[in-house]
Amino acid sequence: MSKRADRKRMDAGKGSDLGPDEQMVERGFERWLNGQLHRIYDSVLTEPVPDEIARLLEQFEPDPKATPPSDDERQP
Image (tube, rainbow, N blue to C red; front, side, top):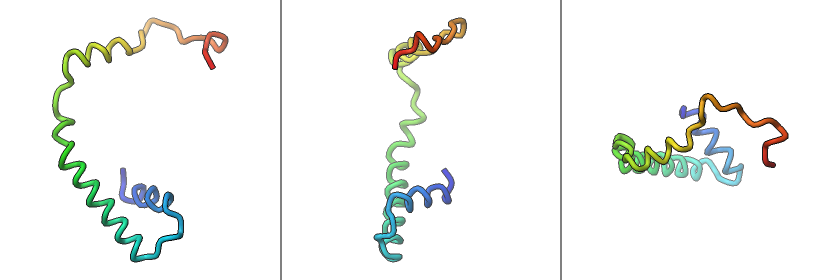
């Protein structure tokens, strides 16, 4: 996500009830938290998916030969 999109997302959820100093602190905290989460979890993303979980995930892959259900067959 770009910094601009990150800033828009953060600002959209806050409204105008925070002053400039509080917004700066909030952005600093968000940046710090993002860094900490990356530090902790980035290594997990490089680990291989266990075989048992991969088999379960393969069961949910759509069959390329199957036709999608018609509107009448779909559940609401």
